[in-house]
Length: 202
Length: 259
Image 1 (cartoon, rainbow over the protein chains, first blue to last red):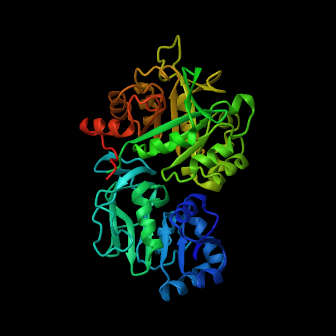
Image 2 (image 1 turned 90 degrees about the horizontal axis):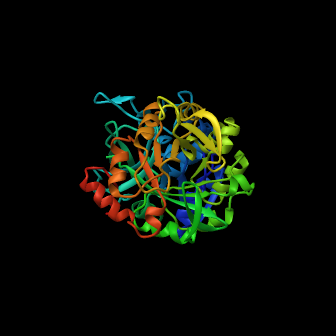
Image 3 (image 1 turned 120 degrees about the horizontal axis):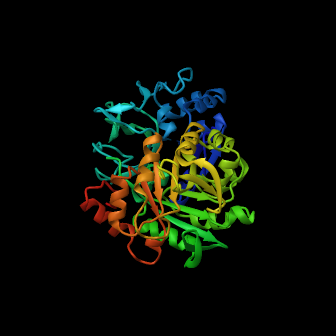
């Protein structure tokens, strides 16, 4: 059973629809016990990083940490990826999980002396896909995925793929059983479904 | 590289896709769910479903049509028409929409933009603007006026001012339809689109007037649009997104080609 954490950040319908389409059994939860006993965890989310404060308030942070430590596959989507980091400048007072070290920051207003529109909305390509990535298995460099966000995580050794918009940022992060994607795989057509299928089949 | 989006629009009335010319002369173009899937398979980057009769006939959005269309559709899906409250929006999201498009109801009560955004995120709120160039003005583009109720009612508001306000109130995108070019297949209103795109930071979707690949290239270039929307150009097999994108790529416009 995939436990899909509901922390009232946007709409879960599309994520559930895609996972169910791929044959996965899903359960929407706010319970730390569900998270501890999950076979897999998905943390979706769109909107403001502040919303992740509810994860701390509901004691889901510690439950997630325990599940991850015992090897349960975890996938964060959009703000769900950002939560894996130390935090985001969008909501300085709310800590992330701190599984990855960096802070998420806003896109710069200009890049190479050109105005950079923000949010970054639309289809952009995955580049520098790590060959050992289990999440991105079968996804070609240059494959397109759908984004809508204004904050992003920097590229690091754990980056599994990058995307270029105002410089390279982390499109997907992966270290062992802990994974995240900044884009919306549930809205990214065949490439997105391939990625979700990889996760479901882990 | 971020690509320019091609959005297929389904204008729906009584559960059927229809197409008008300059907002009137309606003809039947097919089943919404079937057309949505055909467009997505042919490479459309997003699907928009507009319930074109919802506002002036006071009907709610056709949730069943939305549900049926959203099933197994894995590209962004926007629904508009008859959404007057955050509750209306919630019902549409529950039925499977990713974004809502609000038009008359946002003019009537601009707070609605923030109300939907605070629950579902700014990315889920598109403010649609039906625009007509000003007559008897030295700056018909700058003075273009917002119309509501399916293009029937002038509001006295300037398009650029309203787009800025919508952004400040938390809109995630602007869907700009030029009533002067809509349904004519003679090209988008590039001047008006560029004016709005320069005035806001959020993406602007150009609509009204698509007739050829060259028109798309023009509105992505000179019109500074982030996305472009069309309906009739796709429905009757004039072109599909695959052909359109291949032509755009040849013209140097970055587009998503299926891999």
